[in-house]
Image (tube, rainbow, N blue to C red; front, side):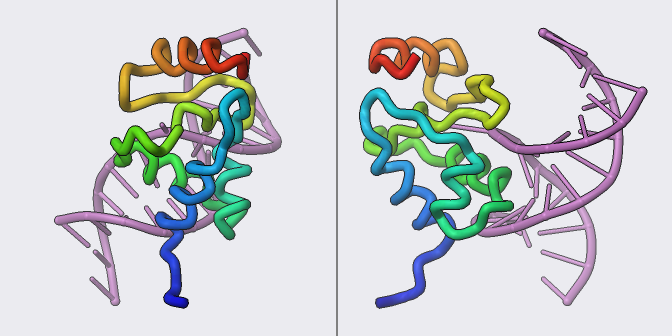
Length: 86
DNA sequence: TAGTTGACCGGAA
DNA sequence: ATTCCGGCCAACT
C-alpha cells in the first residue's frame, strides 16, 4: 500500500460524512492524521470541485458555517438545512 | 531550498 | 458579539 498524501486522506474522510452530519475542519484534519492541520484541510477543499465530495458538510469549530466554492456560504447553509444538519 | 498562499483556530482586546 | 493577531500546515511556485 502506497503512502497516501494528506490531501488524499482529507478527501477520503470528507467523502464519508453522511447526509445530515457535519464535521469541523479540525475534526477532518484529526481524522486525516494531523490534528493541527485544519488550515491546510481548508485550503485543500477550496481547490476541490468534485461534487462527489460533500465539502459543504465541513464547518468551522467555532460553530460558524465557513466558506464554500460552489455558491458561497448562502448555498452551503441551504444545503445543510435541506439535509437536516441544521 | 525558500517564499507565498489560504473554505482555519484560539486567545486577547 | 466582533475584530485582530500570531500560530500552524500542506500545497504550490
